[in-house]
Picture 1 (cartoon, rainbow over the protein chains, first blue to last red):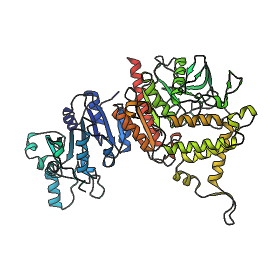
Picture 2 (cartoon, rainbow over the protein chains, first blue to last red):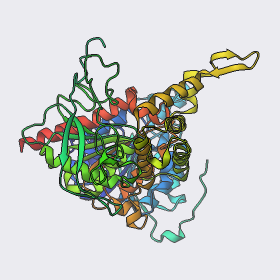
Picture 3 (tube, helix red, strand yellow):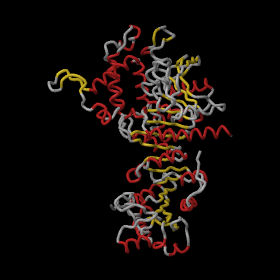
Picture 4 (cartoon, rainbow over the protein chains, first blue to last red):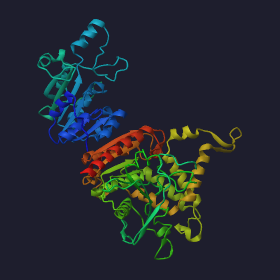
Length: 217
Length: 385
């Protein structure tokens, strides 16, 4: 029995609308399990979250969300190819050791993926670095450079280039502002004005032609 | 003993039940009648939906919580987890704990009298499997009027019984909590069990298992067996932390009559165990452990073993448990995910090895409590419907 939050953060709501009814979902870095609780209660999904933060794991268990204590950087190879319908990763990409490898694994484990991450190309980051000459610190990236878990920050443009390089097809892109809300203006100038993007990903048409590379880092 | 702590179930009285219905066993034999000794803590609700079965491990028994009398020095073996406000909260749950058949604490086992011969069963007591225990526990559930357990819970060999429940009687169990558990023993596990068994066999007092008839007991062998087992339940770090190279007696300088602390500890553990445990039961229990392998009858496919299960699972492992390592719990998790079962897994960082499941480790208790809270809420909601 799941106790879903009555209000779901806007970006998670946008993601939940992209999840098919009854899907098997793996959530990488599932946090306190809000998305999975919602999906289980409202979309009947069979979902599992991977998490390493102890308090967040307990929070998931308290919600009745399936949570597995696993490190995304080390343990994804244990999951069989196509064992899920969808792999979701919200605001975790920037914290993994080998983002390219994790993306490859996501689209191996499931035919579709959803990825969200904060935009390091946002105008405020650019301005921060340009004017103050210091690594940007903001609401979405609150840590100082030396103790941040966000070790692989990128811009939307960087991410899209990586997807092309890894043979991943971007099926959908929604950009939201700092309040996790979409608007038309930032969609047009997303790499400058978007705070967080939600990408729908799929394998390129013919999977066998996708070049398999070793992790880049 | 001073006053009973407020988070204890207090004084408990063991109960007995005798079943005259024959119990067919996995080995092909039939136990014509058997007795079980058990304890219960908390109250069964009107819907009979809040019952929790606690399954014991290799050397456990029915006395899991509370005290037998005011003079007791020690409470039951799982006092850390059973009682008011504890994970198995007796304000909310009706907790049942029994001594399994084959045991030596009051349930029918090798030290009971074989009605056919009028002598102790000894080595003639049939081989028992985890499945047999589940079937006998189901008879106890019937006796108590419990159709469905809210959860079946256990550590180590106890966790294996919980897993087997979910496979064999899927409609009678809603949750499994399997702590420091494994889907089957490794060759190394079996090897340690065999060393323990050989220690017992080689005791001159063993007499092919018929020691009771001669009024003796292979205590030396059982002591050795327990010492081997005990080392495997601890971690290297745990032993170092507890004893280091401290000397209990003798002179290290002269290398004379030296006994390290860890040696005297092991002697004490082995000796006290050998005085209260039956060697034939130890043999039977280690065999049941060795044989446990629910995947075997599904072409060694653990996913298929869980395919018809209906329960939700909580698995807990401990980072320094090398007897049933975290990796073994991960095997279970992966199979359960593939079988589309609800499952959560926490890997608790604790230096105490396999025995950690008996200890009040804060994160372990938090995770266990959070899960049991969900079980309790579900039980209440089900009762309202």
